[in-house]
Image (cartoon, rainbow, N blue to C red; front, side, top):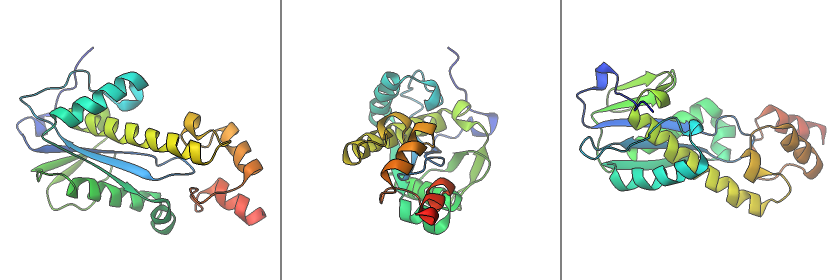
Length: 201
């Protein structure tokens, strides 16, 4: 497997933070973000977009990243914030929180996607960054594993919705369960399928 390589503009930056998010699309639960500053002298093999890794491999890398990174932080935007701000602005807020939570101040920040939150240091949006920048790939792993584990906990609290399987995304089975069982406090009321159910109740 080819290891990720830093784009030229990041090649000589030791204190580069990668930032990624998980959970824009689901109907329920928080949006989770992570920021990671990797240690160039303590490399981690096998970093790639979290969606392209098995759950077992993600779990192993989750522990390795937290052990070897110079700094890491996991942050979130709650359902109430998503409904109040909209999912884009709530995600930007969660990214700001992740960067602010780092124990080291990064010199530059690489954000997965096509836009950056306002930050006190230079930042660059990198499209498909979780496949291009190792620190973003590491952040995607921390964010996804954290959110997936939260959804397992919510599945135990709210049985019948299938949250452990679809992780809150609007699958046909999830929409059927939502219509049958009703909207609980973990749902994003501003999202179309949930809003329509509430309007028709």
